[in-house]
Image (tube, rainbow, N blue to C red; front, top):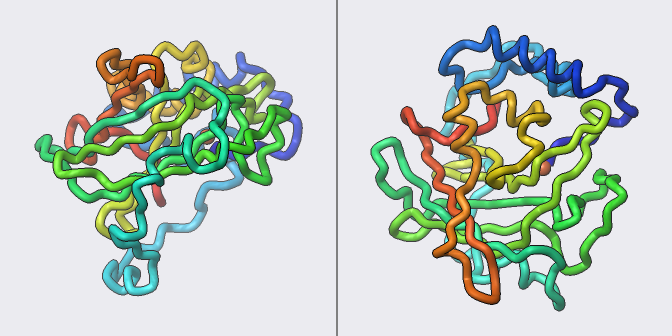
Length: 255
Ligand SMILES: [Fe+2]
């Protein structure tokens, strides 16, 4: 979820486009992350760290006090966001699946994959979401699962709607699903966003445009897979996540 800015923005899309273009022109080729102060994402100016980062001197000590989970914490129903309430959520039912792979293409097994998303109307079930679109009493928008022996995850959900986020006038996020990969410890957690193919909002969204390498940005977009669509039930999208190496999926800077 991108935080809503508290005041009504006055910056227009043209100015955001100019800032994005300037950023892209001086981007370091192959840079993994945008700079922390990334002007087109306006609230990054007031939210990015200004002090030197603190190195994690003893990762094992952090794990002693960090959250833990076990395989028994994840139930068979957690991967199905359409079955968490008495009724079915509104929207276009979809299946999202793919594999979590390391740089050599090997499956990453038993990984905790968590997702969160807006409902079909583009509204999060969150107190701070003030978008005047309807909440869905049958949709919370949170799911999780463990990858199997082939590194596969699988979710059944509804396609999220685009939503406005007040970064600038007429700012709308393309439809997306947030993904978290836990790793083997909390300090390894990676977070990213999956998008849907052909979204006309890509061009206007400073968040996805912050990924300046076209090929890297395209790896954030799932593929529609007709063989994965279930007749009379759901549309299928496939999206693999590569943890590192040249084909790595872009993830948000955790620092
Ligand atoms: Fe979001």
